[in-house]
Image (cartoon, rainbow, N blue to C red; front, side, top):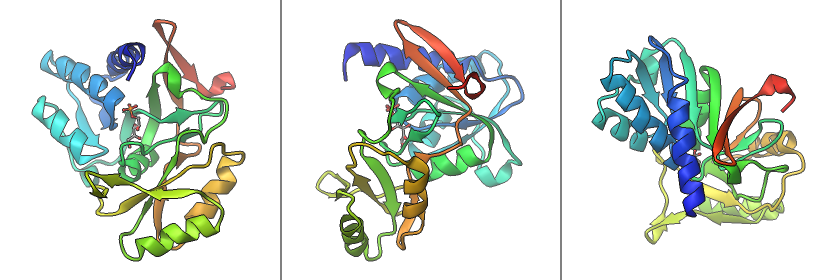
Length: 230
Ligand SMILES: O=C(CO)[C@H](O)[C@H](O)COP(=O)(O)O
C-alpha cells in the first residue's frame, strides 16, 4: 500500500469516528480503513462516549471488544443508527463493490438494517464505473466447483479465492468467487442475475444501500451526500 493511501485511510477513519453520537447503536465495518475508525472510536469510548455496536465480521468483533467497545449480537438490537464501513470501489451513484476482505454478507446484512450507512474511502476507491476491482460473490461450499463453472459459462471470468494455499472460508462457512469483469455497465442488472444463481449466498454489489461517503482527497476529507446528486 502506498504511503498516501495509508495516510488517507487513517485520516478518513479517524474523522468518521466523529460522526458517532452518544446513545447510538453503531455498525462497525471491516477492513483497514474501518480499523482506524474503530481505533478512534475506542478512544472516544474511553473518554465517556456511551454507545453499543454490532460488528460486520469476527475480525472486527475481536478488535473492537479488545479495545473496550461494547459489542452486541445483531439480534439484540432493534435497529442500527449508523454504520460506518469501507469499500473497494464506490461510484457516482453511491453504488459500491465490497467484500475484498471477505465480509460482504455480514456487511450487507448490517447495512440493510441501518438507518444511515456511511462509506469511508481513500481517494483510490472513488470510480466512474464499477468493475475494475474483482466482484466478490459468496457461494455455499457444497458443489462450489460447479457453481464456479456456471459463472464461467455465463461469461464471467471467475476465480475461487484462496488463502494460505486452501480455499478462503468466510465467517458464514462459505467460499468466495471473485469475478474479474473489468467494467460493470449495469450494476442493478448484474446484481439481479447473480442473485438468481443457485449456490450463491450474496454478492458484493451494494446498490442503494449507501447514504453518504466520507472521502479522503487532496489531504482533506469531504462528506458527500446522496442528495447532492452524487
Ligand atoms: O468490504 C470490505 C471487507 O469485506 C472492506 O470494507 C473493503 O475491502 C475495503 O477494505 P479497506 O478499507 O482495507 O481498503
